[in-house]
Length: 141
Picture 1: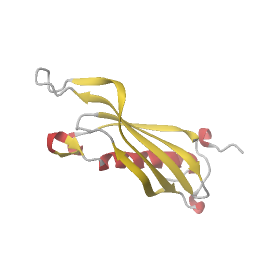
Picture 2: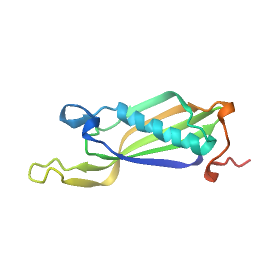
Picture 3: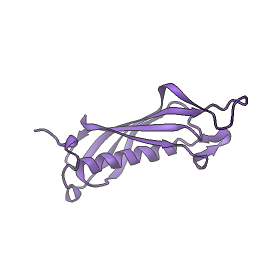
Picture 4: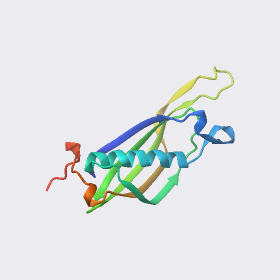
């Protein structure tokens, strides 16, 4: 791993729900993976980067409106312009959805639930690389 993990936290809103039962489209997870990758490249290169491709994407559990999520990412390796990354999405809080409780009732999960993971490559062209903006991401030679 190059540098440290980055964690982005967000809540899925009613506007994120796309399917029946307030189910959130898996593409929303990919949006947040892109944001995590962007932050990693800013810390590593001082540039937002371009997301070239995903090597793999897995959706492992459903995500619903109201869920609180954590999106983790890290740089596995860095080439001349490519940054190979891994991503994981965890659900940490979910609405209770119990008719005996208030509609606003929510539960903190005992353990974060892995709901998705992916790997992909981001590119920062040489002319846009400004060096490490976060000392924790400096490559030791």
